[in-house]
Image (cartoon, rainbow, N blue to C red; front, side, top):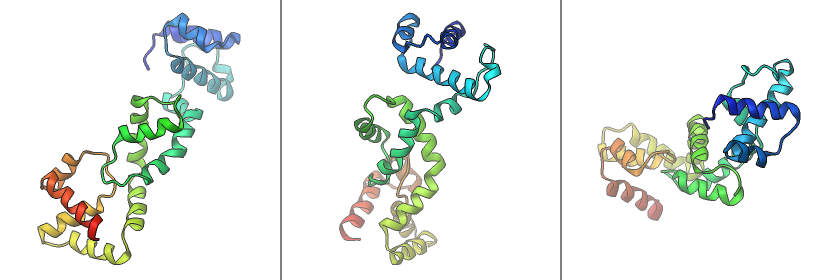
Amino acid sequence: MHITRPKKDFIRRRYIAGQLSVSQLAVALGLQRATIRFYINEFKKIEEQYPEKLGDFDFFISKDKVAKETQWHRNLMQVLPELVAAEPGPVLVAAELHRKYAKIYPNEYKAPGFYRLFKGWFDANQKELCAKKLNTKFTQQELDILNRWRKSNDRRRWQVAVALMTVYTYHSFNALAERLECSKITLRGCLNIYNREG
């Protein structure tokens, strides 16, 4: 979301003057409405938190801070845990997650914005998500066996344990197979056997 300084200043002047037609500003400046809304939200935050700085056209606040305080962001953070929990794993496909998210909020984040926010959220929550999924996917007896295999010197058992215990990853099957030093066919075979037979 890169716009020129004169355009930012134009939106700020209109905000200060109370002239806030998002559609008109978007047409006048040749910008997306989402971009206009973003800067309006930023100026609202400045007005709430630093009212003396609203007229200081050199003062801005963090884009991340602005983004995280929007309704779109709150909506996304509310549904992401449910969307991920519903995925079988181990590879989470961002395009598939975005498709399901867009059914709930069709007029909100498009794919690029969704992918960026999802990756940051997933990186911050991966450990907790995986621990929760492990406890719902496997019995304690199965977890004990897998943990023994993971520490084993038996390469095949180590591969199976890591394949099954990698319940969520934001990488491709290729990357996961490479980590396990096996083929995609072998990796899928481990997962299919577990899903059929336990």
